[in-house]
Each structure stands twice: as C-alpha cells, then as structure tokens.
Length: 249
Image 1 (cartoon, rainbow, N blue to C red):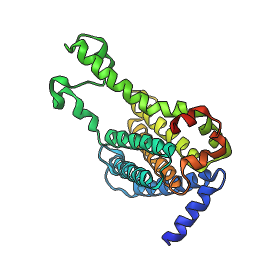
Image 2: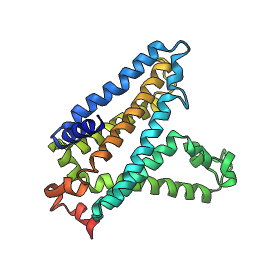
Image 3: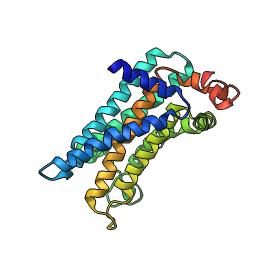
C-alpha cells in the first residue's frame, strides 16, 4: 500500500505540472476530514482551530517533518548548490516551526529580561518603553540579517526558479502553492485581525487551514527534492545563470 502511494507520488512529481494533481489530493485529504470533524464535534467546533488545537499541532508536525527531510537531503546531495538550498530550507522550517510554537515570545522582556524585544514598531520608534537606542539597533540588525537570509536566495535564484515554474516543475510549484497558502494565513492573522466583515471563527479557520496546507505543500516539495536534487532540476535552465554559478564558486 505504502509502496503504491510512493510510486504514485513519484510519478506525479516527475510529470510537468504534477503539483496540480498533488495539490488536489492534499486539499481533499485536509478539507474533507476537517469538514467531517466540524460536523461531528458536539462541543464548540472552534476548538479545531484554537491555539494548540488539532490544526496547529498538525502544522507543527509537518514543519518538523520537512526539517528532518532537509537534514536527510543534506547527507544525500553533496553539490554545493544543493547544500546551500537545503540549508536555506532548514532555516525556513526552523523559523516557521518556532513561530507555530510561539517560541518568539521567549525573546520578550518578560522572559529575556532587559535585553528582550517587543515585535512592535512603536518599540523601535518611540521612547515609550525606555529602551536604549543601542539595544534597538542590535535587534534591528538581527531582524534585518534574518530577513536577508530568508529572502536573498529567492532574489539570487529568481531566474531559474521562474523557469522551473513555467516548465511545470512539481517541487517549484508546490513551494509556490505553499508560499501562497502561508501568505493567506498571514493576511488573516495580521492584516485582517480586528475587521468586522467576517466572523472571528471564520477568519481563524481560514488562517489555520491555510497554514496547515502551506506546511503540507512545503513538506511535499522537499520530499520531491529527495528524488531529483535542486541542482539537477535547475540543470540547463541555470547553466549560464551567473547568480546560480556564484553558489558553486
């Protein structure tokens, strides 16, 4: 049974635009059980989407699984480009797992003492909290460095990534779907919080479901890279691409 599933997954992953088939299966596997559970729960269905609820726990499991796959890939593929890409994925999976577990609050002054940080613009740009400029500069540099490590590879590899997406590469398509799903979750959580045109329960349900799908898409995308490495996928598309070659020097 598992062998047949893996064979089907591999077959879909090797076909152009195979991520469309995989995405359809993932949507069905996620939304159908959630709908059934929502209809059968006798107490508040909102518990499915609550903090530390079932959906959030599943998201954490898939992000940890994706991180383990990245570590496995680091031992499996030895090309310099592959090593850089999977280290980047390790960073993404680690930060996202920490975010799902709300580990970022450990850097708040409540836990980190006088060197802690608040994730608020007024903490950086006002004197309300009585924080030294030196500490603000340090935390600002930390956040800028983290954002640079997160987004610089996208800029450096933008041309081969776009070519892979246009060719219908399954892994690239799954990562694109994952980013889209995570963006929807971010909008629901941070941008639309406090709005009144949709109920809180609906907003949270969309947020948590989108984040779970994002985790699944990333897990599946990294799983695809275990069969064919990123450097092999880029292949001829990036052969004369200078940003890609810079990773190999």
